[in-house]
Amino acid sequence: MLSKLKISYRLYLMAVFMFVVLMSISFYVANHTYENLISSRMTKTKNLVETAISIIKSYDNMAKEGKITVEEAKRLASENVKLMRYDGDNYFWIYDYNGNLVMHPFRQNQTGKSMLDTKDEDGMFIYPAFISEIKKGGGFTNYAGKLPGTSTRALKLAYSEGYDTWQWGVSTGIYINEVEELYKQKLEELSFMGFLIFLVTMVGLAFISRSITKPLSEISYKMDKIAHGDLQTEIGYEKDNTEIGLLANSLRIFRNNIIERNKFEEQEKEELKLKEERAKKVDKITSEFDEQVKKMINTVYSEVSDVRSISNNMSNIAIKTNNQASQVAAASEETTVNVSTVASAASQLSSSIDEIARQVEIATQVAAAASEEAVRTRGIFENLNESSKKIGEVINLINDIADQTNLLALNATIEAARAGEAGKGFAVVANEVKNLANQTAKATEEISEQIASSQANTKDALSAIQSINSIINEISQVISTVVSAVKEQDVATKEIAENISQASAGTKEVSVNIVTVSSLVNETGSSASQVLRATDILAKNTEELKKKIDNFLNDVKNV
Image (tube, rainbow, N blue to C red; front, side, top):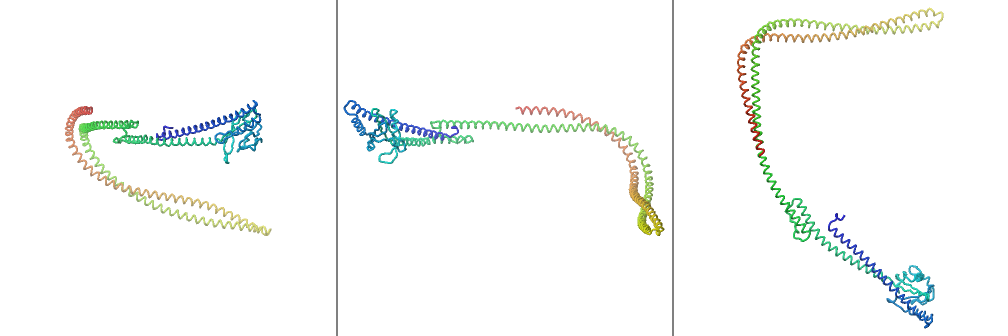
């Protein structure tokens, strides 16, 4: 924990610790002084009471010797003790073991009275306490009283001792306020001295702390500057004959070592830089030379390869060309014959194309007539469909009449039934009419079915005629296209015939030129072989040159 505190705080903490120790010592000394004072007063009080007892005993001895009576001895002893004083006005008083007052310098009117009910300022019965200590062989009693002539409460310490022969108890008391005052005074003096020592110590420690922390702070600050590269800063305190001086000198040596090391590193960097620059230059030169040589050699290789390839190709082409020239020479003869044959065939083809054009023209006319006939037939079927619809309307009217007739016959039958015998003949007629109406309804229903079937067939026929018309139109378009194509073919055939005639003349000229080409190709093949041999020699020399250059560059790089 202390390692986390600054040096100044540690010094101040030491002062606080010293102050606590001084205060503890002050309290101890004050308490010890208080106890010594009380002890000395107790010893003195006890001795005084024993002196009073010895006086009483001397008078008792005189009575025993018969020099005086016992009563006279008690009176004289009481008067002598009454006159005894110490430390100013401190006195003695006598009482018997029953608590009756025998003598009190300031309470003569209470002589012979019981004092057992007498209380101190705190309400304690003091005489029973005195008698209790006497029965123990003598002892001290603390009680509270008042300072003489005042109402101020004061602590008293009384010592009581008995004289058994007369059954008397002798007591005297002293005020211990003086001791308390002396204790407080002593404690204040010691506390003041301790505080004064603490202040002086704090001031001294402040100067000491300042004399330590200020140099340390400055040295720490300069160490930080040195750590950040400021090597020109002055250290200071080198002449100080203390640990601060040792620390400052150590820091100075450390700084100087860093300076020397930096100089050495700078020199090494410069040398290394020169070496690197030289190496870079050499490497650059060799790299550029290597690159240029490689480019040149690669170019030579490429050119040699190209020349070799071209030579091989020329040689192969010469051979192939020679062979093909021979074949072309033979083929040109056949071509001349074939061209003549093709020319005659082209003339025949032109005649055939003219006949095809005439037949196509006739087909075009037939298709147009078929299209017109299909349109006329479609109109007939459409009229037939309209007639069927009208017949259907008439049949519906007949059905309505038959239904009405049937209803009238039913009413007539009902009326005939009501007429009885008189209406039987009318009922027969009504029944016949009803049967006739039913037959009419059946007949019209059959006719309706036939007409519906006829209408359906008519619709199918119309659809078929429409399809036929579409097909005829398509045929007409195809025929038109064929006509155009035939015309174009006729023109092309005539041009072919003309070109074939020209080709026949050209093939004859080709046959003559091929013989010349064959001789030139043989000469080209011989030259290509010579070039190929020269390129092989050049390739070998280039490879040898590349090896020597590579060896030279490797030697330079190794150096």
